[in-house]
Length: 521
Image 1 (cartoon, rainbow, N blue to C red):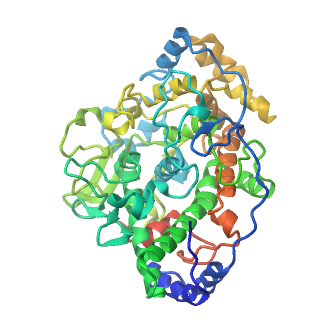
Image 2: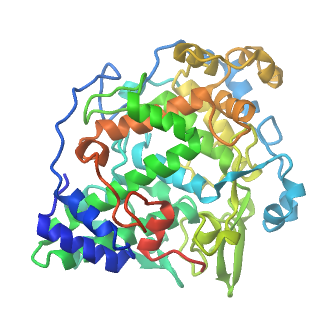
Image 3: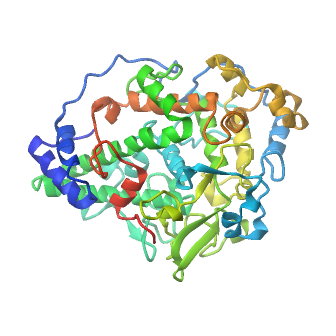
């Protein structure tokens, strides 16, 4: 898929990247070396799911479901996922979006995670949308994962940005320059390209669910276009197809670097990442270029829902030169032309992101706000989602209820059963005593999503995942990168990023800076 530059062009590109992306001089030689290094031989293929179909979901473990999909179990899951029940953090929404950020006494039941910044939630959402999209299964109705299509390629390859490329997805690209992606402005700053109704013209509609993930999508568009300019400066004779392919390769590999070296260690801990890279996954071993998304991972990865804050400072200048504070979702804003919450699907001058609130930029450390902890407390606005934030457009609108019903869709094993299959100690029944009020079975056969949240809460103070959740996430992340022949981990293991401040270092802050959207705004 990816095109590599000649050695001479690679050195010229390194200089161009320095000019465009503020790369320091030490990285120039590294950029040239990485661009000229030949591909490595593929490792032996290994088979994961018995089908191994890359366009389907699958299973990591073949275990009995945690419970039967009968009316009593369904009703119990619906009650568990309702507002004012076991998962609701019961945020004081009447206090308003600003108070919920600045007054710690309002967050005693919904604790901050000071080891992560608020943007990690949305980066995790963006990653999810890049590798998995179930458009056909029905909540609460059992389905065979191996017969359920995945509308995304199951890799970290940015197909959620690029679609099928300039030829296959022409609406995503500039009509007069097919190497570049379309970007528009809703007012002061960049916006996703939109049609007359406000609908975003992007490869994955979910990347317009809220202002922040839409901002990440827009930053990717801008970063790609900046790379196209850098590639053309390095190799003036390159054609449009070649410029597009090389810019895509560079952006994708830098993005994969962030996934592996920044995001994943924050979620599972650096020691497990190191062990995964040294030993390889134990339970998720797909064929080369024939990966699938395990439904156990799809369930466990919903830990991001626990990390969402009830409200955010979207930017510093969007409200007439003043900060734009907003609930992540507010049901009273349904049908508003310019909602005061952070829902997507709207072109508006104030709907842009001031990234220093979400990630720790040098010189603006005082701006950044933390994530919420990974625990059994979900911010209250997530129990009443706007229909537009639901990909299918169909209720229920409680995110927790949707997650619990998804366990029935996939006939999901219990958290305890997966712990046993992994050979790790399971949490004690006493940790789930609160579930007896919903269904006695759930105490010893706990829905996986709840189990993973409780495990993180009890064993890791909610700062990162516990052993079952961490293993499910780390195995799939590393397995996807290792099984993708176009990833840097397979095609160019010595790859070192060249767009950051120094060789071997590249973060989401560096990506946003390169895209031109960094700093306070």
